[in-house]
Length: 475
Image (cartoon, rainbow, N blue to C red):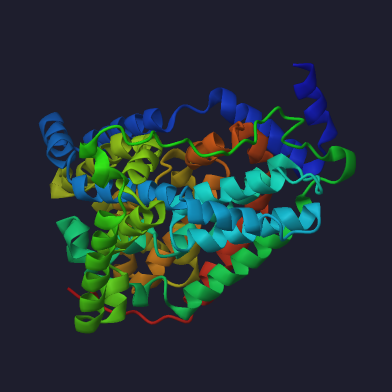
């Protein structure tokens, strides 16, 4: 208890406020699953207040509960494949080499922030594990004394800054995959490939600006001198020796320890990918969530070398997917109640919300209000893909009504959706398991990032949004 008080007293300014907020969050903020459950009943109450009958509400709940089964599995696989790739021997060797690059404590923190964000643009699950292992590798250096809390917070910047502007963006992937879109949303938006969302020059410019700001804040907020708390001072074990695979004990296990089958699977995947690229536009292939996951899964198999080593890595990755598997059905139920439970005059809650956002009007005011709304909702519903399915039907209908570019509306959601992660520690959980830290150890630094990110994001969605023209949905 005394050490905790001393830690808080040693902080100044924003960092001290952030540590107080982290302590409050750790004590009072419920588990994300409990928040999702409460969200279902809140939405149900809104539908009843709108004039829906109890029978209509429970029918929408039950009928919609499994609407996202395919998408739930896909999002769980994003985490699993990222974890498997990050823990493979070749990537582990790469991490050890990268850990030798920084020369000062501050540059080490900003270096981890930059790499975690860069990796998150490819796969946010990979970013969490990669960033955590890189932070640990730097902390093991005997020639460099770095604050382990700041390193851990930097490793989280991929999820807290730009992940949703990259290839594994749940909302962008969903909008580009017709089979994963609920019919109600598909009728409003049509299919939006990456060329209309994450690959627009406005989105890429916004991503570059946010990355630059994040790196600078990470660099200058890293503790120095006596304020540094190393992993050793925090009693963190930094031994990252991989678990040994048991030797083959019987002839029937031969193929489990052979590279033959993984090589054949990788060759088949490569053949499929070449065929897809030869017959379809590149953006269509890149936007395919199923294809993206296939390539990453086979990459993990190839990097681990044998089926036995691969399956050992998968078993370690599965616990990190638990939150997605049990929460996404609740998000599907929320979306169904919002869009299907008709009330007075046959109007749903979703349609009322659409009318509200439409009343705001188009242009910069619409972009800013949608961004702020996304941030607030994200604090209570920490899920990029699940929350998009709750939010998208009325937000995208409003965007169509005020003739806001639909692709840019997705990116407004994406850039704003990352911000709550800097406050709500739900998505920190896999990283904390790697770092062997508590959320309160990191939130002081991530909250500082949030204070700078929020006004910058609001300014960018307004300014860059003025460069778009409205394009009707393509079905």
